[in-house]
Structure formats: C-alpha cells, structure tokens
Image 1: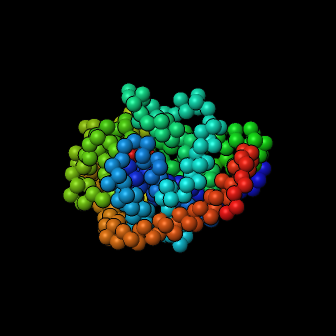
Image 2: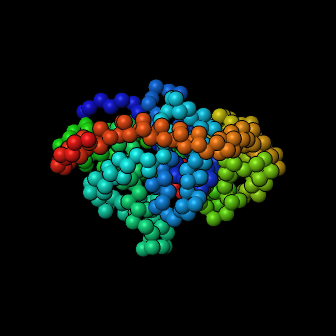
Image 3: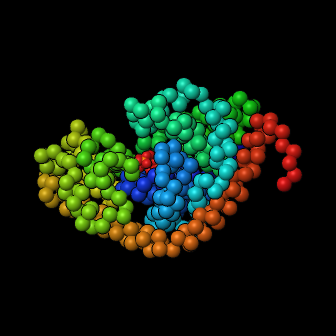
Length: 341
Ligand code: AQP
C-alpha cells in the first residue's frame, strides 16, 4: 500500500447563503485542521451547485460569498489552497472515470439523492444523481486522506472509499487511490432546522426562519431563536433528558458548538433553565461569534477582485497537484495519450 501524505480536502456548494450548519459542521472544522499537520485544500464546489438550478446572475457572487465565508472564518490562503472547482477541469474529468467505476446500485442507496429529489426523482438532473461520483473525484484527485464533513455527507465519503477500492482493484493499481477518512467531529455535526428538529438546517430550505445565515444581523438571530420550535419542558439535568426532544437537543448542540463547551457542560450550566433564559443566551452567543465573521465577509465582498485573485491563484496551486494524478489515472485506464504539451 502506498503511503499517502496526510492531506485534507473538503468543499461547500455556492447554492445559497452559508448557514450556521455549514459553519459548525464544516467551516469551523476546516479552520481547526488548517492548524494541524495537514496540507489543507478547500474548495467552493460550484459544479455541485448546478446539480439543482442556479441563476447564472447569482452563481458568480454566491461563489465569492462562500469564499468570503471561508476567509472570514480563518482560512488563510498562505496556509491552505482555496479555489473554486470549475477552474480546475480535472475534477469533471476524473468524475467521468468514476461514473464508469461506480455502480448504479451504489448510487441508488444514497439517501441524500432520495431526500433532495423527493417525489420528483424523474425530473431531477442526471447530475444530482451522479453527484457522489463527482465528490469522490474531488477528494481522490488530490489523494486526500482526511475529509472534514457534517454528518449528512458521511455516506458520500464511504462511497468514495468504495470507488477508490474498485478502481485500484479493477485496474490492478493497488494503493493508487487512498482510502480517505471522514472526519465528523464536534458537538454540532448535524445542525437541525429551527422549525422542525427532525430535518437538517439547509441553505436552500423553504423558509428563512428555519435557518441562521452567517450574514444574519443581531436582530434576525434573536428573532429566529426566539421563534425556534421547542417543547414546554425546561432543560434537563442530564444529556439523557434530551432523548426524544430533537428541538431542545439541537439548541443545546448549537450552544456547545459555538461556545467550545461539550454538550454535558452546557446541560450542567443550564440545568432546569426555561427557554426564556436559554434562548436569549444562545442568541447573544451566536451574535458574539458570527458578527465579526459577517462583518469581515461584507468587507471582503466589497473587494471582489481580491477574492477572484485568491481563487485564481488557489486554482493554479490545486491544478499543480491534481493534473499529475489525473494523468496517472488516464495512463492506468489505458487511454492513448500522444499530444505534446
Ligand atoms: N445542518 C448541517 N449541520 C452540519 N453540517 C452541515 N453541512 C451542511 N449542512 C449542515 C455541512 O456543510 C458542508 C457543505 O455542504 P454543502 O453546501 O456542500 O452541501 P449540503 O450538505 O447539501 O448543504 P446544504 O446547506 O443542505 O445545501 P443545499 O441546501 O444547497 O443542499 C458539508 O460538509 C455538510 O456536511
């Protein structure tokens, strides 16, 4: 088995404004991993965004805004490679090879496709169905070994491992693609919808009241937490008391994720507290943590040329790693390659 350099890859779709779910489940972890002994590669995955309709007039700025969210949260382009996916065509090219490795039966098991396509599967884009194969290409194109993601993406990273193993086996290229590890850490790996604690908080959810956007101001944050669905019971004395109380558990998880405390510590601090006490404390904490990030995001969005420059330079650095790996994958596949470049 080849020894692969410890390398992190992860991405976020520019399919709407960033949410507190994206922040706690992904971006905050990206920043933590940047401080460790990894090469870190972070991507605004615009090819994934168009698996559902995106207005071209909005997509460009949505891409910049996700990049601004990364930068404002602490991703440093001198330490991490930051770029948007469509500027490195190798992603789409490797995805095609993987479309021919992955099996239809594997794709049929993907719960995210079922959730997103809903009853309208026949009308969904073919891209939405093949999304996990592009995600596998994103990760394996860099021989990434670690993939920080929220809980909802675990199944896709597992599929990436299956695709890597099948490619290596079918082409007798043992160890060529690594087996990447999903890194799902922290107390808020699945932040739930504020109006329905059984559904995930999403950028593209129907109502703005169901999510906290990273750019929401203090009044909006306070209003959304105040109106967040809960049950009539106060907070319990122990974590066990949150069982079967999805909305209450979600607010405790969010508090823990933002404060850096564990869920147990939050419960100990607020044991017996009513929502009239806990919700304003949570809103204050969210404003304290998000306001500096959202201020920096709007400052960055006033200098779009600078964001574009960072993404362009990042794409050059990403391509320098990706292209030789794609070339090897083409050679392994047996493609005739006689062009002189
Ligand atoms: N609610 C969440 N809790 C924890 N982590 C989350 N992530 C997304 N929502 C939550 C994590 O954020 C990363 C980027 O996700 P994405 O934007 O590429 O795709 P997604 O998971 O489909 O996110 P959304 O917000 O639900 O987007 P839409 O509504 O456009 O489909 C991933 O690591 C994800 O786990």
